[in-house]
Image (tube, rainbow, N blue to C red; front, top):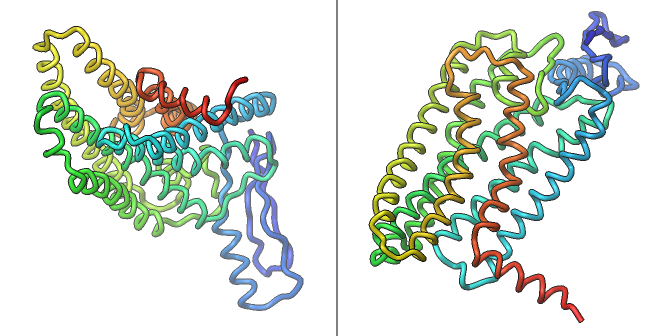
Length: 351
């Protein structure tokens, strides 16, 4: 891949911006038809604060096949997660704490995928891979908020399963509407707090020169790699924040499931065993796929992973995991499958 410098005429000092010649280039707004000090200052700001996302792959022959694959996955994600929300909303049988949390998990997955995937698809087929500074920072903040919120929602769902299986007689008392609302609200609020702190540091970073982000979205470590500023404190904050989130949520999850497995082993009913394990296996599958990727990317100090490895790993928690979650929870849940079948039969009657 060769980078070529381009210059813009009409200024006393030439401002450089870099383009990627292998697949596409990052274009900037054309020069204004009039000159002036204020106009020149604004134009310089636009040039300096435009990033180039290199995208998922450098091979042009793979871009169309990857576009089709990611497009299909995104459609499945949207239909699956929105469908899950609709089923839970319209069916009174699912107006329980477990499905209340699941509906919010589906909402977060839908939002997260919609924050990242459209830009990924655009960069696979469009020549212009540029993204403005504020758009990039907004994408980072929203995507990071969704990841942290999802992490704590999964922990909340583990606690909900613990109460339902270990203390079934007290379930409706313990998991009250007020507590459920507080747990979900707390997940969203904490999901915004940490990324907001990291965003404050990111806004202070100096981006000048080529401003190339070697990723398919504005991920925090990719932003740090593109700056000329000292990144020790932002890296330290990211590592500390990610480690705290992972340790705290996984501790809740592991503790809950230790008690769950002990309780299930004491259940003599075969049907009780099957129902408890069916619910837990679905949840544990979603947890494993999500947390393994986060631990690999953000909780390994001084990681020497190549940027290509980081991109592939990022696909799992940005594209693959949001698509799989509704499938995991619906295919292993008889109640959801029955509700979906009834909904389809109602909307599309067969004669």
